[in-house]
Image 1 (cartoon, rainbow, N blue to C red):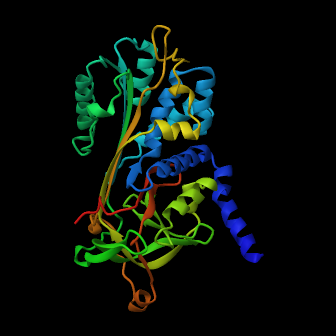
Image 2: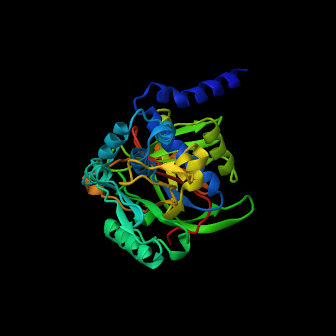
Length: 391
């Protein structure tokens, strides 16, 4: 009975902050977007940027009226599009010398659909986005234009591209959102501690990989109801951290993500529920890039009207016409490696007795991760296999 009470109190606290916070709807949507996407990528590694994709959905909410407009705002947890505009500006201003987060949106419509001038102005002034008309019958030209834009916006740092095969022959629009992140750890992983370690794919299958190791002070939490160990690894920007959720069971990731989804856990609430510990940490080196079609995920979350054939996009189009959204595509990238600038931070030292009694945590099985602060989730995803590990 006591354990049940404890479980209830822990579960309730996941949403306690969300219910009292002004950013509750935003961070809860961002968390759930990761969970719903994870369900479609159970055997694949993936990463998405919820706060980045949220900006594109805000633009779409401006493009429609009545029920479709209300539907998008409800799913996003917004009272008005003004909230989304302010969130976008906050993200654009989040970058500092030691932390770079970039997000970009692009809107492509077939030449048959003239874009409304007011909508163009809003996109350009509020979201630095310029809607463009292309001839979608010429799919090669569409692909070339989109890929040139991706390369330019990311300075070639994101290699993923749109292919002709990814476009439907009947398609007449494409909405693209991309996100990129660069930062350094607060405390560098020493290269001399790079060593081989096992990564368990299943209970019976393992692969030897390169693992970064170090002794460090981290915020750590054990959540019995989720059957997971959580930790926060700080970046040089002290507010931004890498959250890792490591299932206790080797094959526990799918069940964990289902629990997170069912309990509607706001990931940012976990940040306040951990305690500092001296940890001997082992972390894989990886570089991950994902190119995802988001239509089905968004429909499952409740954004459905814009994907139907008979929607009035009055605010998007200069002349009355009905259309549907053909594709919402999201591309993002992230990397975990040793890099950091230790000269700029205070040296952390530990007594021998502390190291002997420290908590050992090896990220040696499929895990869930998110890059976040208390107001937004920059990235989230999971690792189920070693295909993106660096050697």
